[in-house]
Image (cartoon, rainbow, N blue to C red):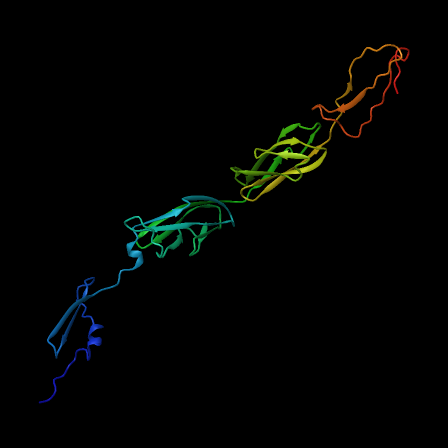
Length: 273
């Protein structure tokens, strides 16, 4: 008797790796293996393994919006979660921009402002996605006023102001104020300056978009009055009295470098040296 021809798998391992796919698309394939020496019948199903991203039911992006100056960058983050709210750490997030002419994004969520305008940056994992709104603006020009200022007594204050504009007009902006020499002039984060010592320094306004300007502030004490101590006395004839004199500015601080010159208006009553 001639051997029966066998068109199936030549071995059990071969059979285990063979799936008979049904004609209906999307249904699991069926694996049927018959072992001739043991009447064993193995029926199993073959199908595609479930991917990590298939368990993702939501994606959240941070921040949800941002204002960028053209050429500046921002790193956004995306969090993928499963149905129980657990973070899917190994989920593959795909980033894209609705308008690459306005802003681009790379695979790590690094967003770069390209041109003035508005667009959305999208993060997608599996069938879930979220987005953030990006608004780009041109780098403006900041101006501080007054551009020069003179304070005439220690403790005197004044208010500096900063504006940032581009071709469209006034821009919203936040500023960081810095004094180059706080021993001469101090400044608050609202632009309020105060004289602390004689000299000159620059007070700088740093706009959050990167532009800056400064005001040159000079503290030049001016003599406002001379304080004599004691201010009035009564003494017997030929009795000596010691006086002191202090040159003061309007704030009551001594003006350095000034030497008083003493004199008596009626020398027949009293003399002084």
